[in-house]
Structures are given as C-alpha cells and as structure tokens.
Image 1: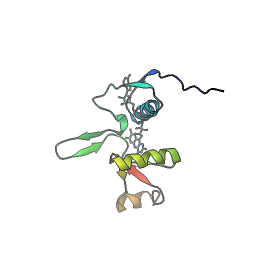
Image 2: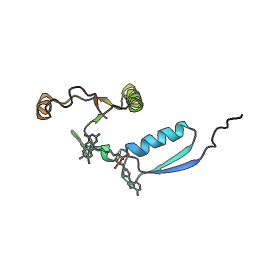
Image 3: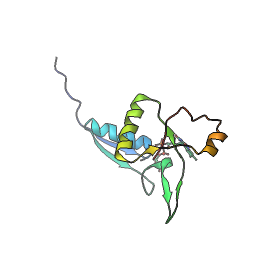
Image 4: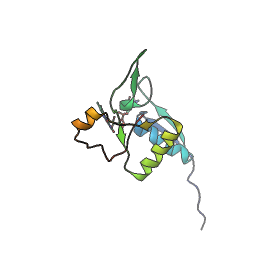
Length: 109
Ligand SMILES: Cc1cc2nc3c(=O)[nH]c(=O)nc-3n(C[C@H](O)[C@H](O)[C@H](O)COP(=O)(O)OP(=O)(O)OC[C@H]3O[C@@H](n4cnc5c(N)ncnc54)[C@H](O)[C@@H]3O)c2cc1C
C-alpha cells in the first residue's frame, strides 16, 4: 500500500486572533499555503495589547491557563521564543479569587 501525502492547498483564514493564528501555524506545518485576513490594525484579536508612550493595557485576556498537553507543548515554545511569560496574580488578586489560581500554571503574552 502506498501512502501519499495530501496535496498542498491554498487556504484563506479570516481573523488573526489566537484561533486563526494557531490554525495558520498548524496548516503551514502540514505544507499548505495559508493567507490570513485581518480587519483590525494588527493581529491578536481579543488578546491584543494597546500601547501608549509609557503604558500598556490588555483589551481582553490578561492571562490564560494551559491544561491540555498539546497546548502546554505549544506554550513551552512560546516561552522559549519569549512571546509568553509565566503570570502570577498579585497577593491582592489571590485573596480576591480565594486562591483559585494557586495550583494552575498561568501565562501572559
Ligand atoms: C474583557 C475580556 C477579558 C478576557 N479575559 C480572558 C482571560 O483572562 N483569559 C482567557 O483565557 N481568555 C480571556 N478572554 C477571552 C479571550 O480573549 C478569547 O476567548 C480569545 O482571545 C478569542 O480568540 P479568537 O481567536 O477565537 O477570537 P478573536 O480574538 O476575537 O479574534 C477574531 C479576529 O477576527 C477578526 N475578524 C473578525 N471578523 C473579520 C472579518 N470579517 N474579516 C477579517 N477579520 C475579521 C477580528 O478583528 C479579530 O482579530 C477575555 C475576553 C474579553 C473580551
């Protein structure tokens, strides 16, 4: 039996949030030609950060939690390339969340 590699396809992805970007990375790694279309001024969607001269503010996600082994593997790559970092809630927010985050690994981008 001969196993043939699926042929390379041209694929359009609408939206460069974390879902579209993850999809693009995976499809590219499988050999497809990918084009991302984003209506905003930059990528990241609801995970984007607004920057001023001496301040930054997160529009949406302040942090995310990695539990799935595949996602944890991806996060390891982001940590190694410096686009994500471990995120620790302050002692003030730990008290507010009753220690909910104590045993979870959380990250920020
Ligand atoms: C206030 C707030 C706080 C949050 N806090 C957290 C948190 O602490 N932790 C956590 O894990 N999650 C948090 N979330 C949720 C998290 O941000 C989202 O679940 C996640 O970012 C969604 O990613 P996505 O790629 O699915 O969608 P999006 O990030 O919404 O990306 C969609 C992209 O598609 C683009 N788009 C849409 N329509 C078109 C079009 N027609 N043509 C071209 N481009 C288009 C948009 O501009 C956008 O960039 C928060 C969300 C909000 C709003």
